[in-house]
Image 1 (cartoon, helix red, strand yellow):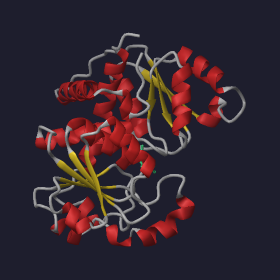
Image 2 (image 1 turned 120 degrees about the vertical axis):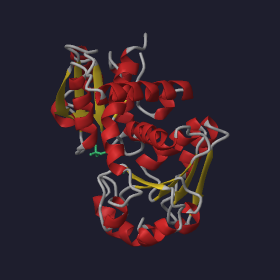
Image 3 (image 1 turned 90 degrees about the vertical axis):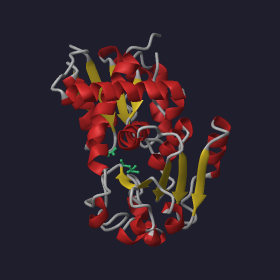
Length: 306
Ligand code: CP
Ligand code: NVA
């Protein structure tokens, strides 16, 4: 049995197989087909942070495929001390075919996966957002075809989204630059892991967004303060002041470059309305693709033998 707690749970070939399945199911859906692959299957969603895209795209995907979803907070599930974690994981997985989780702690997802009798998918933790990164690869493929050699420039925080994108680009032969203010780059611990797992990765860090985007195929940003960092938002706002993706910054990028954002966006902070709604923006294609990717992932995970 396979889980997706992080992209490191997949080999590059497996990652491409998930993307291929997602593409196939998206094409079918666009033709009006909703193959009933999972009648009676249950998706359990265990969340401790809010979500528009992740929660609802997962649930819509399962419904389209013939199954249904149940939703509970981690507190309601008893993970606040009501019951032991192994007991919660064993019981919930005995009712379910897939469990998705959104948590602060990455370890919590990995611990549930350890005791679960069904696949567990990370729907975002403080450290990882693998389904977003997979979706972004799907979206980039739709725009440019082959991923190899494409340059993604992430202007913003060395956070869950950019760390997962670093894995995603390293696994697919893409280049990535993180343009971040001092103190918000990838941690030394993360770079060590990236170097160990992908010695040939082409991920670098810059403090000059204009220079970084000059060779970008994709310019990506995310919020400056992630969920759980609300108290640090003012400090971050000051630190990231020169890192807004606005029309001036996009003018330094090739005209063919696309703008990406995982959403939700704080319009007027990390990105301007002009860029979000401009002709280079593919943010709503990314958002829709969350659902197509979820289908590809569900089908791929449930077809793996234990
Ligand atoms: N991009 C993303 O994960 O959005 P939600 O927080 O709305 O799920
Ligand atoms: N980095 C953001 C991503 C939201 C989808 C957060 O963790 O809040």
